[in-house]
Length: 266
Ligand code: GLP
Image 1: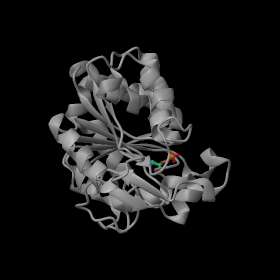
Image 2: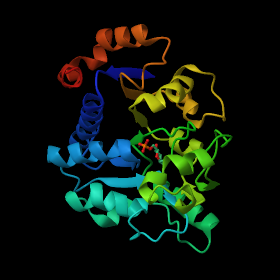
Image 3: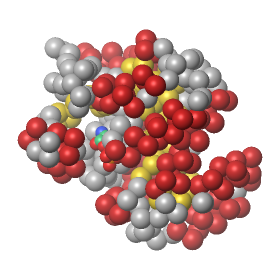
Image 4: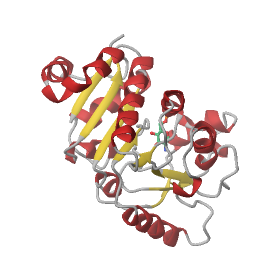
């Protein structure tokens, strides 16, 4: 794992967007795994502004609320259309989200896994982190081998996401269809972005704590190609920050991307 700490959230967002952009410029037919949440909104804005072509790109989102039609403004399908898909040249047929309106949710979950496999797997999976330590909607005690399935959302998550539902946690759907932790770990590369003081504690537990199903994001420690981009606030509870900074400064594989690090440090 590589942890890159940027001085501001703007810099962390810029670096994350540039890393995704570099992936699709290097591999125009990349399969991207996408995340939602407020943190990602600026990443998508930066990607749109980059002018990079998504014409050959295929996407799979991590999750979708159960029971919200795709055109509901709070559905992640609507979020993705608004923030990214409608603003790029991506072929809508190549964009995938779990079907939270399916009559048979278990079958929709299996179908989603099959679609990921048929696309050849995910090259780069973008991740945020929830205050419960979830990636996707893998709430605490999700099996670290879990596959796409529906999960009940914790009161903490419904409170965290209530702002998008008029501030009322009761209006946040109770369940979501989410890629499993095992599904996420099969992506060839992981890129997790977290910003803000509210994430500091859970970020430290995910990166430095024991691997535990109580913090599903801690499973990223099993992945052999995982980058974590943080702003200074989200990094503020880390014990090993000096060492992580040392690695980034001395790691030759960053050399071709020094320009990215410079962007991120300003
Ligand atoms: C939702 C998504 C997660 C995301 C999280 C973070 O719960 N299901 O994938 O990581 O939001 O949200 P925010 O960026 O708004 O803090």
